Each structure stands twice: as C-alpha cells, then as structure tokens.
Image 1 (tube, rainbow, N blue to C red):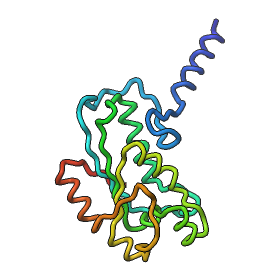
Image 2 (image 1 turned 180 degrees about the vertical axis):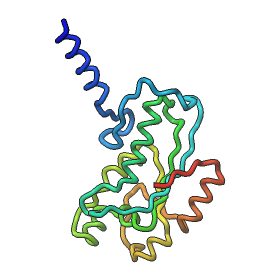
Image 3 (image 1 turned 135 degrees about the horizontal axis):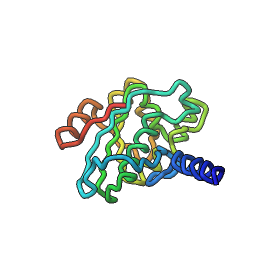
Length: 175
C-alpha cells in the first residue's frame, strides 16, 4: 500500500511538471498551474505591444528568446482560459533583433544559414500576432533591400510604433 501511494504521488508530480502548448504548438511551453489565482477576465480583450531588441549570441542557430517569450505569453493567456479572439499582440522588432525578420533566402545570403526564427514567426503570425520592424534599424543595418518574412510590416521607427500602440491602449512588455 505504501509503495502504491509513493508511485501515485510521483506520477502526480510528473504529470504536473509536464510542459504544454495550449495555443501555440511547439513554442512557448508552459506548465499547468492548478493552484494559480484567476487574474484575467476571460471575456475581456487584452491588447499587448511587445518590444524586442535583443539578438542571440548565436543568431544563425538559436531562436530569438523574445519570440519564444511572445509564444509563452500567448500560451499563458490560453492556459488561463482567455476566449479565442480576445488577445491582440503586436511585436515591434529593432536594434540587435532586426535581422531575425529576414526571409530564409535573405538570411541565407547574409549569414549563410537558414533563419532559425522563420517557423516561430510564421506560427505566431498565423495565430494573429502582428509584427513590425523598425525602418530606422533596417537602414542602420543595411537590410532595407532584403526580403522580409511574409508576416513582417515596416514601421517608420520602433519609437513611433511603440508610442502609437500604447496610445491605443496596448500594454507594453519589453523583452
């Protein structure tokens, strides 16, 4: 009897520790948290603008941590029970993160590697996440003429885009 109780306890901890992907499959894994207090109104519309500036130490191999965090944010809202369609996320990309927006062909030309961010950007874009790259950063990094991922739009500048979305009621998250 004692052994069965220990096994059952171990299995419950194992199940509780498994990562899940409630909305964005394959990215932004989250844990079930049954003891969490309900902090969101599942009927409310949430508007978030995410500021991604950082690049990775190995940008030809590693997915940008900012995109992974956006996927995790999306999955957390889904885990908390937010109704589909009540989450509006806009991502502003600039500074060291700028090259992540390149198409695979353009990334290959610049870095001799496929873009490791293509799949996560496409997955998030298909889920309704909107992306804007800073036009100033594109010019500073001489990437204007390069083809961008199909989900990427260009803003005059990151500062303008961030202030615009905040003036429209979006909450800012800096990554």
